[in-house]
Image (cartoon, rainbow, N blue to C red; front, side, top):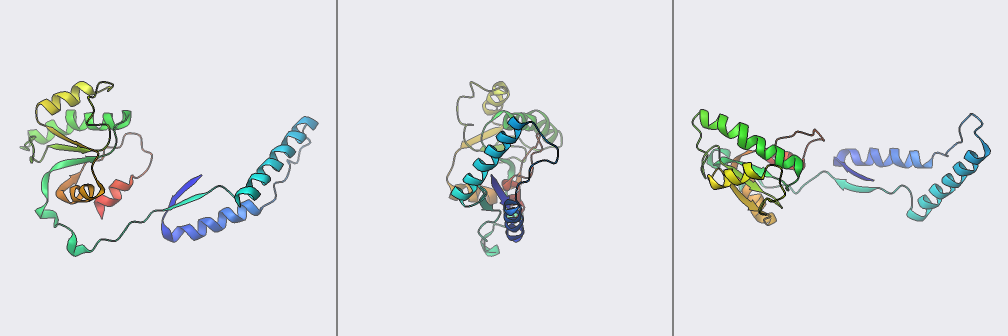
Length: 193
């Protein structure tokens, strides 16, 4: 089990997990068949053996923190470039989000005067693994290839951490469409910082 938690919550969560692990597992109140009791006893013994061998619940703590950056080193918002920055690896849901930006957001931006070419307000810059491939096995490959041919997207692919930090400060807008609603991505928190 992996937990990503805010630093201020981690001690409280650790204490609750330790308390839960220390609770004895009690059999159910009803009298199950003898085979179920034997099976439960074996499962309980195996569970306790794993806990003793591993020192408790198998938990990995990943603090939800990052290195503080000196405000003076940040590029002022109004000095940042126009364009939409998308961060993330290529997978089916990401492809849907990028296609939505190309088919819905860019036309809407163009209708109010935004340029879609490089350095334009509606231009989409994509950073992440998989996007610089040939897009052969893509459900939206035609949309992406057309946008690339028309100069409406720039695909940078996988870049260094240093270039990623620079890109996060280079553009005014981080585009992060969310269709599957699985939570807040760390990239969104970074963009707000």
